[in-house]
Length: 214
Image (cartoon, rainbow, N blue to C red; front, side, top):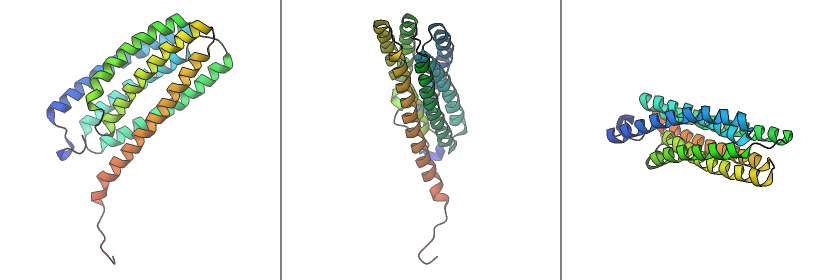
């Protein structure tokens, strides 16, 4: 999108993308409160991690809308900020999973499973809406990676709930939280790397050309 003439996206695509971002912002903001409440009731570290992820994604969608309004290099700068945030989120989740492992208390699996299925339905719908924009600039790519990671994480939460129910152990929940943390670090690194590349290409023409001997 930042490669378009004067850094303005084609109108049909831009309008559609903004509408999708508003839908995603509302859905993720609502699910943050749902999963935060469910994590407190069930004691699930995976749901707590997913709730934090929903909050981060809602913030990311808001930043993406602001970046679209600003245009130009701000698209890549905001993407870099979001990528760094995703990586920090992943590191935080890994730390929280370690703390839950130290406590050794298993979560309540039925709440985990029910809320995990609801979150999966929401994130799958958002991912389907964003699928057509997955090969865009770093800003678009960051939104798609967030949505993709969320859907994968929700599947893992549901699987963890089944594992906790079948074994009576909290380790499936902890393992899923650790996987979600790793996905956050990996996705954040991809976004930061692409954003840095885009900023480099954007600023390169502004550098003075030096001929031989200068």
